[in-house]
Amino acid sequence: MTNIDEYHLVPLSIQPQGKEYLVGNTELDEFYQLPVEGVRVIEGLREGHSLIQIKQTCLDEFAEDIDVGSFVEFLLEVEFLHKNKTDAESAIAAHSKLSAETDKRWVFQMSAKGASLFFSWPAVLIYCLVITCAAYLYVTEPQARINLSALYITENFTLFFLSLLFLFAVVSMMHECGHMIAGARLGLEPKLGIGNRLWIIVAECDLSGIYGKPKSQRYLPLMAGMLVDLFSVSSIVIILAILSSYGVQGVWVQILQALTLQILITITWQFNIFLRTDVYYILSNYTDNPNLDQQARTYLSACLFRLSLGRVGAPLPSAIDKRQLKTMRLFSTIWLLGRIAAMIFLVLIIVPALTQYARDAWQAVGDGAQVPFWTKVDLIAFFLCSLLVFGGGMLLWLRGRFNFLKRNRNVTT
Picture 1 (cartoon, rainbow, N blue to C red):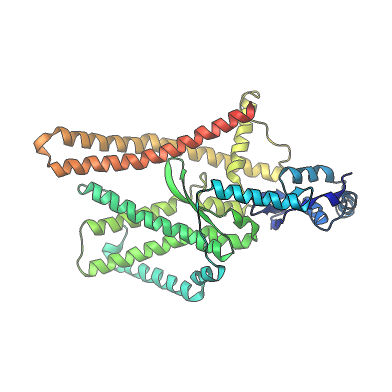
Picture 2 (picture 1 turned 60 degrees about the vertical axis):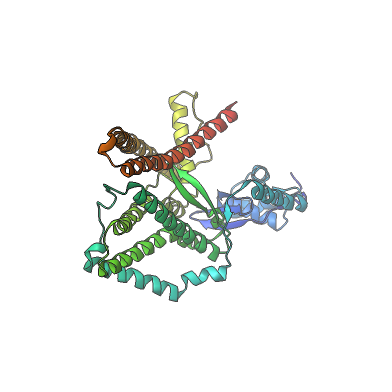
């Protein structure tokens, strides 16, 4: 039996997660769901007990012979346990240094006290007043209401597109700031980067350190982005009502109406839980499954493994229990159907729309003097901007798929 005096645990967070526990280290950015037996072993290691003592303690508490040695090997493998204190400290320092060198995302730093001001009672009262005022103006002022045709334009294509793109980028940044400020309130240092959900370019706030906090404290940072979106929509409604009172109409009113519609579409898009959206993370937290997406991929890989008689995919890990397997089956179905629907939307809606923009631009150029010069420029610029945004998202998506397949090929070989 191994001499436990030769080993040292890294600082570990242990949070109740349903019937199990979420155990991990924020610096290593590694968290695992462990049963209560595993937590008892970790507690014994912390207290410096020998493996024989820990084994006897578990036997007394659970009336079951726990394979403590295998669990210790697991802790060594994931670098939660090291042969001495120096190795443990070095592992965390090395990981932090590597992360600082390779991670180019912006680290958001704000004191917990400063972040708490955004969620104080005076601040919450202001938010409620703005939302209440917007609700009243929405009922009383027609121009402030949702305009379902706001995204349909017949002129000023490029001005409309670039203005809407800029304003939506500002709103999106406010959305991410909501996540980051709520995370900073818990003492986290969130990271902000650019990523993609399928072919859609998105700003990404990394709140992975949140799993070191109690489950109940995670909801506000995860929901903060959508709450900011609600505040943004309310603010735009008030602005539209003010512009209406001064008789202002035209393209800028339509741009603001389109921005409102775009934010509402984005809030609805968050419910596409087959992607790693805000609602996906809220659901993951609620169901005590920190990585539903990976579980779905694992289950579908196991299905391919069975259907292909072992030629494709990988078998299902034996450690998965019945409750977890039921969740994997349900979410993998949602995951697969969601992606099929997204591909249908890509083929039947997005690609034909871009093709039509290209035809309009080409027709405008070919009509010669019948189409004003600046209208030609406007249509061509609008098409190129649309293609650039779509193409950038497709490039990120395809590159991610290529890297995923490359990693899998390296693993199998």
